[in-house]
Length: 198
Image (tube, rainbow, N blue to C red; front, side, top):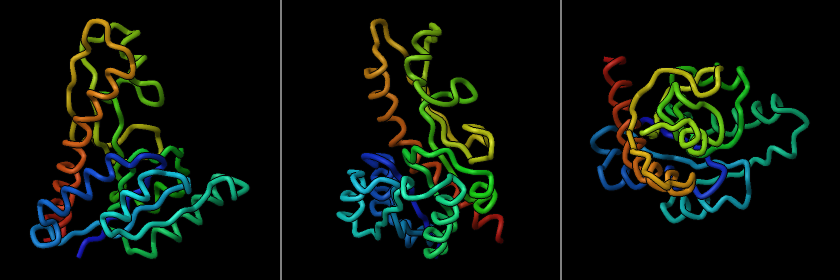
């Protein structure tokens, strides 16, 4: 069985979309895969309660309790590895990861970013797209590398920017697409693991 660990910092809506897809599409039977745990750096992350409602193991590792990013990431690695993950999915995990963390999970670490990468890596993507006069925005599922919001692109969704859009308007429409493409990209990634092992 291929184990998936999901990292969140907030509402966990993308995590919930993945967990829902795993249940509805019978990943355990069809893909020999399951979501085994949801971990957060914030004890007040709403997504932890959502994960628990799905019957998933949850845990909290407060980054503020550590002296450095390196120390936090080392502790996070130890916590994640308890679940023997074949895939670690970042779903609104608002931490910049150290090169050591990324290297440890090389080839099995995915993220979703709310822009059409390589455009607008980093924060404030929706306002930046509007300010730049773009006609389209979107979301990207990609493999994680040490360079922020880079790595191989697994899936993208395109969303039009409408006249009068605020960043919040655009973010809401992009998020609905994120919930569609992230589970699909994870499922495709899980199938690719089987192909590479065959």
